[in-house]
Image (cartoon, rainbow, N blue to C red; front, side):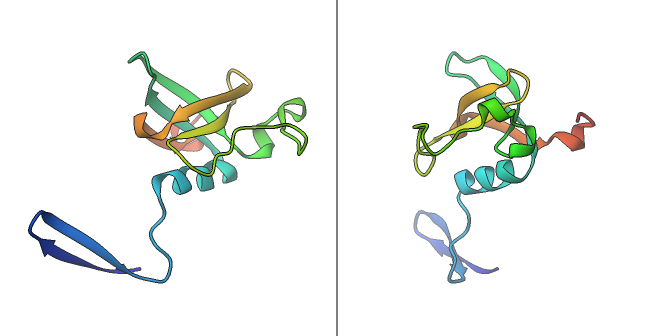
Length: 112
């Protein structure tokens, strides 16, 4: 993707020369979580740091926890909170993406 960086009075502005705008952090996280199993390290609302093994890929979600069309789940299409499946707790959890400190595939840590 080509981009131009323009200096402005208040700093710098990045202009992307593409019909598709750059992916938002939310879109990036959801796209990767749908494909694989990730470690998310984040700060909880109470200030505590937490490490979660999370996914949206059906490969790691038990059949009885897979949402169906009849179940009303929160819409993950907007906002700072995403809902993911925690593979250690074996249940759905919410994460505020503005509190994420680190995000990487489980396999890079040697844990499967």
